[in-house]
Length: 183
Image (cartoon, helix red, strand yellow):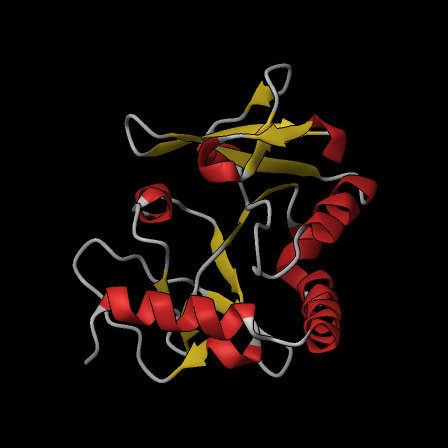
């Protein structure tokens, strides 16, 4: 089994190389599948990452969550403690560049306890069909998921679904992976 570091480099390159038209088409299919889920329809508070670089686009998803009258909550990284705090946003203008160059909620946003979250959408470089994900190596999302009680979902381009993601004792499995071709 290949090591995580080389897989991270490989699948970041794979994701970065996806043609813009294909990316838009897959983003649209993923968007539709996400909103068609019964779990989405039942959820009141949805935790979702703010997309960065070549990740599956989430800003349209965040806007739709808000327009559907649900709570959109996004992470703010605490680099010192390698943890995330979670804040409700009411509009995308409440995001500003934060840790790692990723947009985060601004200071006037309200913090939300993890226990209020019904559905969590987390990023990854690649995923397997068993729900394993390869993140960026900081452990932020695995720490978040370790005691998360709701449904955990990953969004992935088809090119980043692989047979087996190597895992260790700290890696948390997701409940569902949504890609353009699968769910």
